Image 1 (cartoon, rainbow, N blue to C red):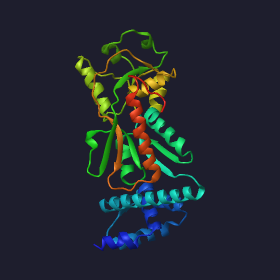
Image 2 (cartoon, rainbow, N blue to C red):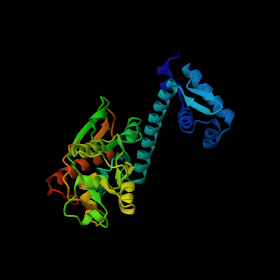
Image 3 (cartoon, one colour):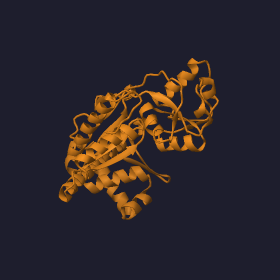
Length: 321
């Protein structure tokens, strides 16, 4: 095995990193060549150069395409991280040159996006209107890998204990209970009281099976001696949830702050049933030891301020920042 430290520090070039990421993304030499606007022999030659530098096989080739070996997967993660830092630095320099205040990238769960994050961004924009905020919605399984390789600066959502790790820093901001919602036109919206057997017979749009909120919801049905609903659509997307709550119409399971926010706009109706489950708090996750951009620091400060304002408001509220 070659001197890995020397290869990583001195020998790898930007074009090498871009090629590795493209090979991992497309898994096909022809498509990589088209994407990078080079010939297929050039792709094969450059990959051979990289593997010679490491003294390792990074990709297995077959008629079906290219697949990273365990060594290759590790180097690809390194390449993604370096390219993300490169993009971030380029954007920061461009922002300074244009008079803007910079850019930050945040991954957000549904529980945080419509209220906590939206109001925090509003605060940030009031201080620096030209700061760009990139928001990617999803759950921890999809967003944490992007945070780790530097494609996201921070994550805002539930601090699930199962994802705790020494490389991550967490900060709790809010406790956010769950509630059950329907579209205002749903037959159950006019009921003064709703029971669990009735809910079990209805169509639902619910979080993915691995989400803590979904697990706790199923437990509530079992607690009442009935099986969870069988007519399901599963999604971590708020847009998907809102769409199917409206169009099927289905029952939804949302954080109370999110539900009350959209109930005030006439888009949802919170059903009169108590959901006594405990979930992790909503908060911030960042990479331990990673230097934050000025825009990221400002956004974190705004998230803290927004959380303080929300905690001090009346129950069921989500007042403007």
